[in-house]
Image 1 (spheres, rainbow, N blue to C red):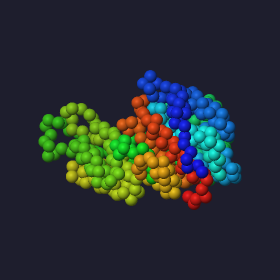
Image 2: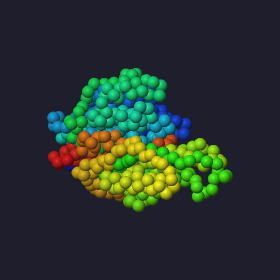
Image 3: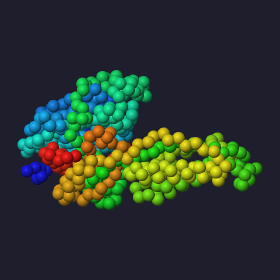
Image 4: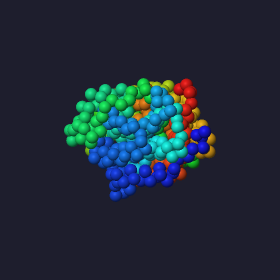
Length: 413
Ligand SMILES: [Zn+2]
C-alpha cells in the first residue's frame, strides 16, 4: 500500500532554501528571471538533483525540462507533476519553486521507500512562467501547441535578443521530448498567491479551475473647458463619467459571488488643475469563474458605459483587448486532490485560481488539477513572500498521494 507514504519535510525545506540561494536578494527574495544566468543555475541544480536520483532528464526545444521516474509499465503515458523555477524580478522563494521541488521531494520519497508505480511520473520545470521577459506561461503555451515554436523563437526581450538565442545562450535549447497527447494527466502544486486560505484557516486549496477574464480599454470623450467660467450643468466632463463607470464596475463584481472588477489604469487629459478633462483613457479587468456570469458581467459593463455616455453627453469607445474563458479542471483529478487532503487529515477548501498558471494551458489539452497552500498575508510576486514549513509539507503530501493514485489506478479521466 502507498497511502501511508509521507514526504521528508526537512529535505523539502532545505531544497527550497538551496534553490532560493540562487538569485537571492538582500531583502530575502529571489531574482531568477527566465532565460538569464540565474535561471540557468537554478536549472542546473534541479538537473543535478534529478541525475542523482537516476531520473531521465530531457529538455525540449522551448527549454522545458522533464525528469522521468520510470514506472513498472513503461508503455503507459506518464503522470506529470511540476511548476516553474523562474521568478519575478523581485520575487519570492516559493512561487513556482515550491511546485517543482514538491514534485522532486515526492519522487525522492518513493525512491527512499522503494515504492513503484504503474505509470511513469514525469517532473516538469516549465520555461519562463512569470513573463518578466517575453511573455508569461511561455513554456507550457508552446508545449501545448497554443503558441507555435517558430513564433515563440522570434519573440524578443527588452535587449532585443530572441527567445531562441537566449535558450541557446543558457544551454537549454533541446530536442522534442514529449507530446501533450502522450501525457496521462498533470498536477501542479503552488502557493495560493491570495489571502483566502489564510482567512478561512485552511491548509489545502482544492483548485477546481482557473478564473476567466476580460480586459478592456475604454476611451471617454467629453469637452475640455475652463474650470472657472463653465457652470456645472453645461459641462461634459469625461473624468466624472469615468468615475461613474469605475464605481459601476465595483458594483457589477460585488453583485456576483466570486466576481472581480478592477480599474487599474485611468488617465485624464489634459490633466491640469483648472481644466475640465476632455478625454479619459482607462482599463477595466472583469473576472469570474463561471462563463455565463462573466458574459453577464460583460453585458452589464457595456450597458453602463452606454448609459453614462448618454446621461453626461459623452462619447465612448470600448475595446476588448484580452478574453480568456474560465478553465474548469478535471473533476476526477480534483476529487483525487480533495480525497488526499481529507485522508491526510488536512483542512481544505475548494478554490478557484485567480492568477494564471501553466496548469491553465495544460488543462486545455491534458486532464489537470492543482493543489494550493497558503502564503503569508496572501502576498506573492514580492520578496517578502512566505509559506510555512508545515504547509509546504502538507501540500507536498497531498501532491504525492494524488499523483500516486493517478499513476496506479485505472480510472477514466
Ligand atoms: Zn508561479
